[in-house]
Every structure is written in C-alpha cells, then in structure tokens.
Image (cartoon, rainbow, N blue to C red; front, side, top):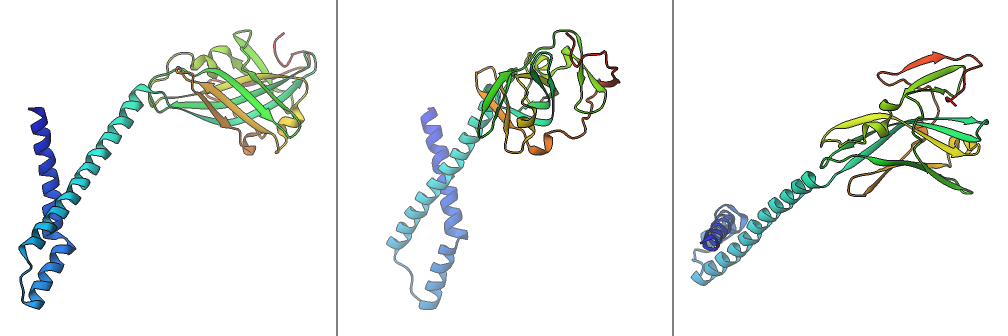
Length: 247
C-alpha cells in the first residue's frame, strides 16, 4: 500500500511540473504562435511527444526537489549526531622562564559547537619555522591560583585553574554554545624569538568525542600587543620577589 501511495505522489508531482511547463512555459507559447501564424494545427503525435518529454522533465524536477529535501534532512541529522567544533584564537603572550628553561605561552581562545554535544579534549599547540618544528599539550595549573607575568613591565595576570579553557571544555559543550578562556603551554628552551617571528606558523588544536582533531592557525595580529583581561580576571602589580609562575 505504501508503494502505491508513493507512486501516486510521484505521478502527481511529475504531472504538476509537466502541466506547469506545458501551459505556462516558452514551449506552449511557441506552439500557439506557430498555429496562429501558419493557420495549421500541429499533429496529435507532436502533442503526445511533447507531453511525454515534459512529463519526463517534470519527473526529473520532482526527483530533484525530493533529493534536496533528503540532503537537507541528512545534514540536519548529522548536526544532531556529529560534533562540529570551531576554534578561534584571539591572543598570544610569550615569556621565557630561565629558572626552568621553559617558554610559557598563554593563549586566549574560544570554541563553539555547531553540531552534536561534545567536550573539547587534548588541547595542544604546534609551531613550525623553516628550521625547526615543535609541539606540546597544554599545561595544567598546579595550584588553584597562578600569576602570569605579562611580557611588559611588572604587571601580572591572575589565572584560576577552574577558569582555564581546558577545564571549561572537559564537560560536554551543547550544540550552539560557545566557551572561552586561557590555555597555558610550556615549550622547552627559549623560543620567544621564533614564536614572535612572522614566518613562524602556529596552530592550536583540540579533539572532539569522536576523536576528530580541529586546528586553528594563529594570525600575526594575535601575537603580542596589549593584553586584555577576560571577565572574572584581574591584573596585579608584582614586586621583584614574586615569581612569574608559582614554584
């Protein structure tokens, strides 16, 4: 029974397309004009052939409409079942700590989920120059509060572990929701010069619950500049006895 219902819908859609093409299209106008100027009626076989052609064309157009609906439904289904994380990298500040021979990289980033609910895990960074390549995963803050010395003066930004981006994205990010925060990376050696060079390509990445990696390149305009505090953060003034990061 369902087969015959579907067949009936098919003939109805194709027929409506064919009738529309025949009565309102250029073809019908051309045939009427010919009969009017020549004073002759077109053979019935020609009308039958034209009707068959227009019905076939209508069938194709009806199928195309159904195909568009099917593709749209599949896209909506994927949105409900497959995560679609999109990253944005806003700022990067770099400082070298000679006490531990590490370059600290503080990233300000955000992630929005345009697909199914998913966490964003395994945050990492990689950079490449013509002469070297390096990468590492994010560094977890060892204490609840940490102070980060900015690349200028004696200012420091107080960081909170629970407000870091990796902490905010450990739980599922619902579809359409955006989360932002800081990411801290530590690279071996003093690579501040390489990181700040324009020929250094820098990527920040994460992974969704299906194991799909998402990367975003850091633009040149995001390097250095005047740091901006996020909501809930504050700057403090350090004295010389305070470390860049708690030991």
